[in-house]
Amino acid sequence: MHGGSMSKATQPAPNKARSKKTDPASGSAVDKVDSTYLQSLMGYNARRAALSIIGLFLERLAPYGLKPVDFSVMSISCHNAGVTSRQLCATLDLLPPNLVGLIQSLESRGLIERKPHPHDGRAVGLHATPKGQALMVQAEQTATELEIEKTARLTPAQRTTLLTLLQKIYL
Image (cartoon, rainbow, N blue to C red; front, side, top):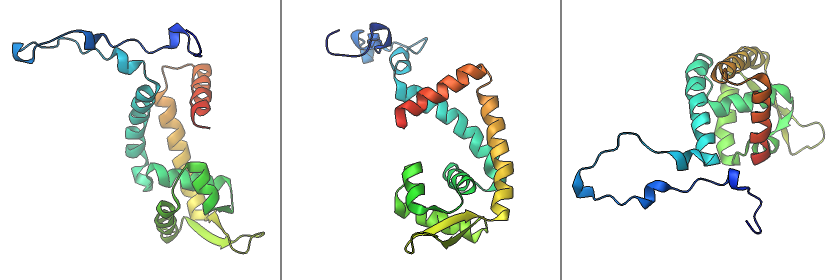
């Protein structure tokens, strides 16, 4: 293959289903669905894996009142006292208008508080309150347990490799 970096082994498989001509009026039925082409796509596989984990995440973190984006904001705030809204948006790929209501909601629940930034008089730092920190200790433990459960068919080395490879795509 000239000019490309994909080896033949990493190229998506051709869609054989397209080459089959079927007459919709013939009433033919599919015994086994061929998803070979979709399974060759990174986005398809990443989305299927994410949906599998997110479904369980929503269920297990419901008692904490945290959706995935709430969890992410709280985790960053707990591990980075004084993080600014701008830093949160950049780190989590969020739009500022979407973050405003989320921060207000977490603040009204007593999970985070705003404090003046020590170096930038225009900025405000976000800090997890003791209540927020205690909640996140439990929530992060729950998240860790569910990820271990959902990746049980992977060895620890495979799990580390998968995380590294996924991060190479978006970082």
